[in-house]
Length: 233
Length: 81
Image 1: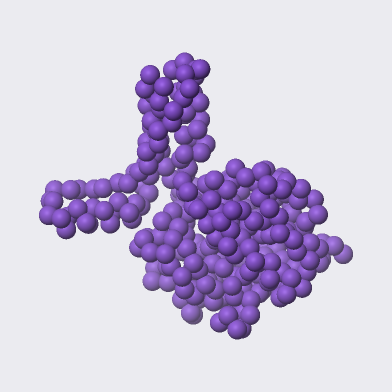
Image 2: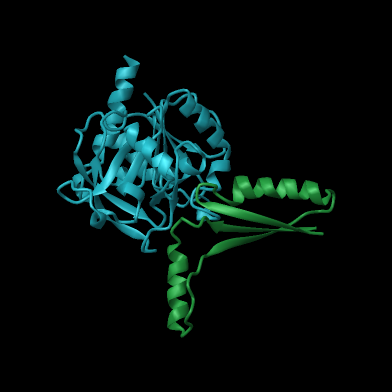
């Protein structure tokens, strides 16, 4: 099993993701420069957080034209695993790998704080080690995390059980007050129809060690590693 | 030849920046402002090797595929000879 972390100019959570895979998950991982196009050595790639291309035009809009993104599309089409975190989620939406878009937070602030998210489905390679309803405490750090989509897309996401995480309170209640950024239906993370591509605004890679205030994010990487281990056997 | 592209959020999409600007405008003392929507404006210079209709076709595609996100935004193209 091998992981790759894609690095765009302006990515800044690439080392966090690398650290988690190598130290917390204990698996081999490479950095992949955005001009590289060969993803054949990898079973899963992480598109990390940050400010690719300085968020010029729209967050994630320019990164989708990087050479590596064509390979990411093929990689995803072949059923291999793609995890987009924060800016990575924005890039996946801009690239059309996930539906919808992420716009400016409702209250305009850049929000950097721990929030609670509820695990809405365990039918995904990223959450199969969790229990449905599990509340995770994970930080967010974004100005454009307000998920929007049209009614038809929302209905599709709901009916196909593709909303993976929703913002909630400590007890797991999904309420308007627990929605930090105005995201539609409190959506914090969604997956594609093939369920092998996950995008989420919270940063699980910043919540994998107790020293950091929470290790709840580890279960997401543990799920993915367990999925890959099962696939290898 | 110059192309001008205007990109705006679709009418149903919340524009918190526009709302904040509207609030500031009202603080300045202006009344009767019912809405402010913030958009983007692009000027694209073309080198003259294409005619108006080819230019429009190219710029429309640039506007659709790069400058705007069709999920949340709409665009308008003007060509100036």
